[in-house]
Image (cartoon, rainbow, N blue to C red; front, side, top):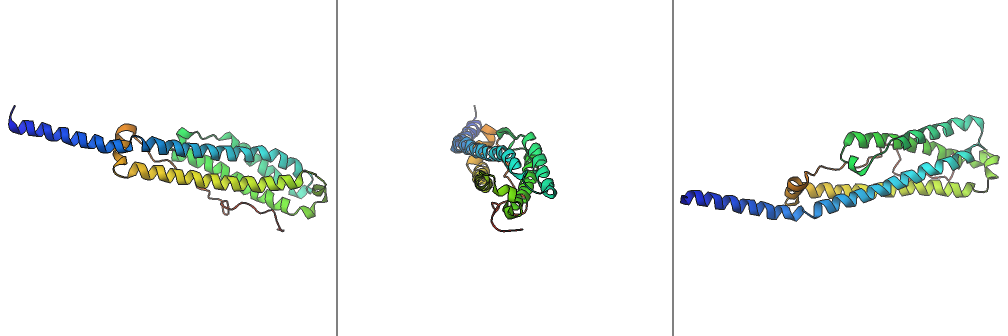
Length: 205
């Protein structure tokens, strides 16, 4: 074997070893950060599900409202049905189209819930509502649940940003590509105006 051939093989082996060494920097960090983002997504799903579970109780309360307000209730119930029909697993978080479909459904429900919050805030217009013993509790639950959704979405987006930065940053990007074929995860965008703020049940329309 010629000297040049030997040197070429040695250089190739050295480069390969260096690449593997650098790639090793992302072997643990990439899946760790991905799993952290998935765990945060599970919190988001739980928060949305708790909101969906709360709506039937809110609907029962709203039956005491005036007939002209029934449209708000119908809108909430219909939006809930659509939102709960679209499921988004952790494996779908890298598919922008699936994430958008889920976001659109949840954002529509958020919009409907904002109208429902305004209805409840005007309880003085509906004496029948005042007589319901658990009314104040439901008020608090609605506001608290929307606030929890806001917080879990913020935590999820932070975890996604951390993961996406990791798979794009040298040297972890090498390991991310070679060993995992890592793809960016999709952050959650609440496009409904004011959706990032928990609805206030104080005051009037």
